[in-house]
Length: 147
Image: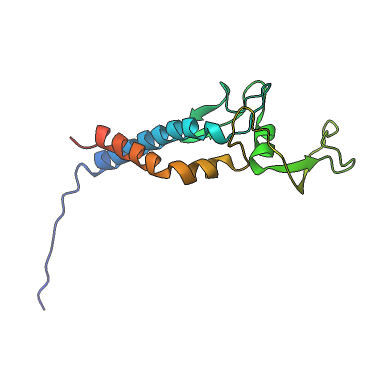
């Protein structure tokens, strides 16, 4: 039985992998920036508190909600849309040092500032904007892809 030997030149493979990784990172960041803008109408807000305000930022491919006036626990509380209470008192105002527990009571969102405000706002935005986000990613790849 005859054997066949094939030699493959993979020089440049590391450069190609680095280019693909760079393109993916750029595309993910561009999509996160666009998603941040497109998601604003779904984010709960009141005249006094803007969760989607200046404190919201994109870090890499992640949208981070909460600035100086609202922190991450507040954003998480609103995102899941369930009332959280002090486990000992049952109050929505927890004693210092206590960790709130989730109830099965849904929050009611003020729609004065954002008419579509709701829990799970990213999922609502994704349902409406996914095709646009895919286009943003494709344009970014086309813009910076192989010449």
